[in-house]
Image (cartoon, rainbow, N blue to C red; front, side, top):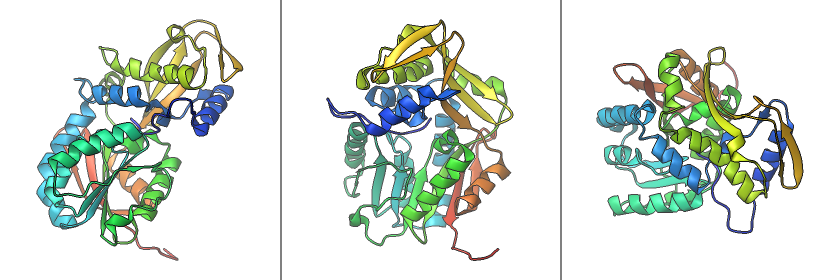
Length: 324
């Protein structure tokens, strides 16, 4: 699940949110970028999802990180500044920080309130570590805080968030990360593996309905921030495996013919029509390495769990090459 945009102060609306929603509802098929899930309520619901029995990625990745700490330290060395992209609640971060003894920690997220709260908690756990929260959109190259100076950087991108993007967008993001972290950087990234749909689909459509609430919260946000009249009871959460594209897709499906307005603009949807809200691409071992190389990173180590459900990959920034 993708970490994205955050709460907007009362009375203000992010113009990018308005533009994406209006354009997404007008296009066919309808689609709204998944980054807009993450208002405060959306961030809270996502954290609840990570603790569900069906949602294997979080606990599996934590198990891998707990096992590989010493190996990661030996490969990256101590004293790097750890830069986490889309940090959210930073639940996996302490495992890495204890392993690599960084010079500073920079969590990046656009969910500002959530970012500051999680940073305070982490700073209390590591009182001698400079914690420098950075509210920003990590999808583009960033000028990182000057306080980390010329320290070598270790990017951290757990949770298989890279899977929420189309392969082209994922490569663009990896290139932006390389530009932000600069020469000599390394990247520790989580990637979910391709597996049976019987495992994948319940992870995105849990029995308790938490993922459904997370998906439907996007409509609640539209109503609240964009003066929408979308009837939430006219939509249902749908999660399905698209084998051709190797991804789980999440949709909001109209359960009846429905009319509504958003920002004063009228829309109509027929029964069964959907709004595509999220993708979660899954990668085989070779696919993951190709993706990283396309984004400017050379894999140097890879770890997985015994069942091969999930992978954590360490890569280093590729040198610019004018020719093959």
